[in-house]
Image (cartoon, rainbow over all chains, first blue to last red; front, side, top):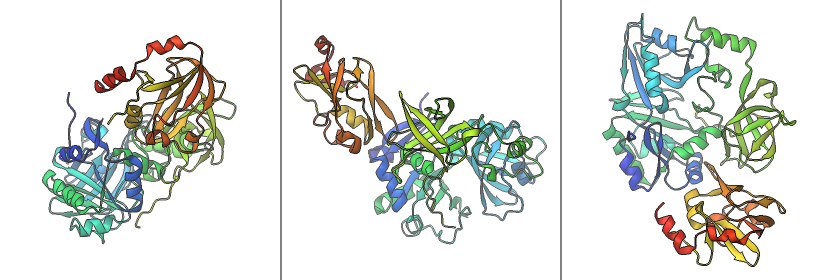
Length: 360
Length: 127
């Protein structure tokens, strides 16, 4: 079966991007090199084609009650335009997906879900509509999306794209016609995400390319950027087996809410603790810890494994996130990582290896 | 353009051996460094380690992934290119100039299993 392509695919090919399959899409991994694109986002402005992401509209009289039922965060009483980050969980606390919920109106919510989980999430959502007077509209095919990220993102949005956004507060959204613009992102920098028709998004991309004020960035640096600031990637730091509590994301699980799927188990995990946790580890050495590498005690006993690891581009340190036995999760604990046949020493540290620069 | 140097012996996993008497000077080809992208780390064996033809002897790492280095010939490591510890990007600058290890070969017959420059260039074209 052939992979899907976003509306921007031909532009990526023409720009010489290295294309690779991701979540059933042929996506650009890098246009020049990952480090340059990464640094462009940290110091200037970069743009990502994220049209592969999924979108679902939840509308109707029970829209908010339904969202509250499937979503771990609390959207009650929020003003229109507020955006929330959180999860959908199973009764056993396992994570179905992490997602953004945009409250666009009292009866109108826009959910943005991971490309790799679109089918699963939509099926999950559809299986929980009983008793709710709502309409679920799976709209992924109708929306293209770009993310404009970096300290200069606001100026680029306003001056190059003509999209007024200076007044948008962090984690809020507005509509311009059929387009949705939010001050959100996955990089740790200030930035915006724009959801619109293919035609519109292609025009935006061309404006950015012609301006030479915004670097095209691929999925390669999207991962290095989010990793450095401690953001999880579903499939690595969250999964059916990794609950948000295990991942250290309990603040997005409002277990005081009257009910949501998984509430009891997540509340129990908060109260009783969990057996395994996702931690940050910094190696003493230049060697690079990577996904799947074993984490051990200093005596050589295996206690977990690396979920994501890189030589951090912005800090130069060899760091990783790892899912390990909670008894060793305290900051400052000495642990070892096995890289191929050798053992390297490291220390448990905060997952935020690089400070975020959100405009709050 | 894929740079292939005459007189070297090449493996299917894109390592080369430059033979100087009994010493085999081992590195990765220009094709390999180009495929890897920017090298950020080179995992090298120590002097006196044994390497075996066809077996992994280290790794070359780009931002996204680690790639095993496969020994084209067997022998004992007599020298390691320490410069790569601080400047792994030398492999991108000139893969042939910047070798990775030198080994005292124990079985020069193994060179017959490798490709010459022309065969390797053809091999790369088919990749």
